[in-house]
Image (cartoon, rainbow, N blue to C red; front, top):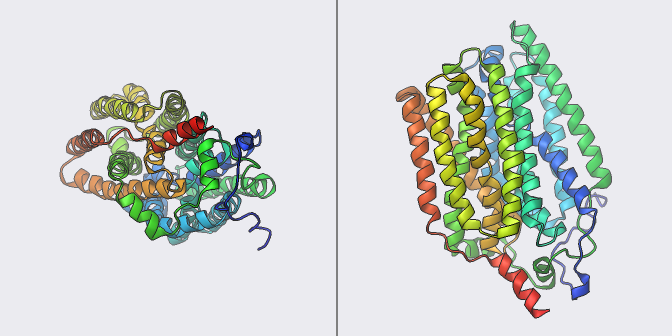
Length: 446
């Protein structure tokens, strides 16, 4: 265990000078390794819900039960983010990433034993183990950026990390419809096993690479705000930090805004197979293509683009409002093409909607980090993810209920109203960007 616990304290007090601030090229290696792990882990979330009708057929269960393979990630994050956040603060990034990759690899190996049609519970257990690993992954993008990257690269680095989250979801949505043959029940079982083998190979390679090459932190702080954090005693303990965040009205408002908007987006991703297949029967392959295009547009292009804009402008509030307004308008177009069964139209409207709504995650992480500084990034990021998943669980069950009780049109109208509520909530957030001010004040002092 000593091997894993080297260099565990990130809260050591240093005396640093102006010359101690520098960025290292190795920061890109750590970011790439984190992205590899994130992609493999996030592939697991929608991997089965995207083909819910086929999984339900193979295991002889309802689609609602299949949705549990996605919602279990939401539930476990809410239950574990506080204790795991404590561990993230106690140990280094290296320990955090090694534990996460171990849990991801172990969960995928467990799922190899689920291919008997009577063992759906094994699949859920494997998903649960992967979900535990995901709590670490989702809590540290902003911390990784702050520890390794300069002040003019923070949002870009964070957006690249978030891009890997979206890319993992994209791959998890694209591959299953093409890898799972559904001519017979036996064909589903055999192809499901091959897909899980592919997952295990990728997870094993990433696990080895992280053991060999991932470092805990750079030799020097990369920014003035990070230097200040290393030079001063920081608040510790869940109760102390929680009390500070509870008093921060901007932080609470942002939790609601981005928690609701991105939580609905996550819930919609879980039930979208049900909606899409209703209007486009036998459209599993089309759904895989559309999902892939959507998450690539939102996660790869959108997140990176808006992260770059944040670094250049620091206009967090204006950019957030713009993105949410555009999300509402594009959602109306998406709903219209689906309700009209316009197959070609969905190939355009769904990715455009994703370009904006998926990017709110990058903006949200950076925004809450800005207004909560100097609270540890993993704490603010973890709190945001917990609220997102809380809303995701609620929205998933609400959508399932509305679809059955009131129909698809009513469900889509309720979703639109929730997005509008997010925009209204954002209006009450001030422009007190604490981390940016810390960098500017340190620059003046020097």
